[in-house]
Image (tube, rainbow, N blue to C red; front, side, top):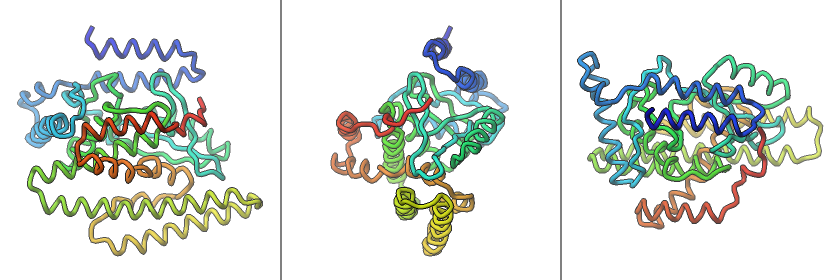
Length: 346
């Protein structure tokens, strides 16, 4: 039995022994992970296969370069992740569901064995996702569902390269790998916002360093403008969330709250259109704003971005030294009470 298979069995037993009410969900998650492992092939084998397309061969070779950069320049964990390749036959690996109460900006949290609580729930099975989403809608929840190209198993398994992201441009491919390896370097139980904002900060700083080392100065300049534009959009979203939070605390009828809530969403879309019209570099939010806005959709952005500035400032304070930065983040994690832990739901 190989190490990955052993971890799978161990993880499965731990899940079943944890006495969780939704055993079916956890079994579905294990089956989803196992199906990925079954499809995975060693990248060296893929590269030596004459049937491998030149494009895939080139991208997998680039992954090897990105991994080495992550280990040597960003001091990320030298794990076995991204040494296998799997074609899942679909454009995403799973879907994440985010949910809030109708008059709340705070995400509902679900708690899991081994990894603690998180502000989203992942699904490999779309029928199971649809049933769960319908249930939340019937409860009056705001629900947002996002396609996910990759996720980290936090070192429990060696995460493979997937067809869902392997053909991305080099800087995006590098950013995703840096992000997921950052979760292996540091993960705080029960604090989704801390974990995701930290990983985004490592992703951003890592991509900047990657582009600089490869002499792609024009792309580096464009990437930095992209980050500035995204930060401006995130600020817009955060201000809208503050307005919503204030509204929900007022002593008003539900009907009036619903009306004013929709007005805030409509105004946010208009503000975004005005802001984006000034951008010469796309911010990546255009498609996101085309969807229906609700509390959960806005909260999903906050989860990934609200603390990024804090972590980037902390990295700057360490003169860009990633190892010192990680130790500083660990100190910060020990001194910060995880907000997610106060609202667990299973």
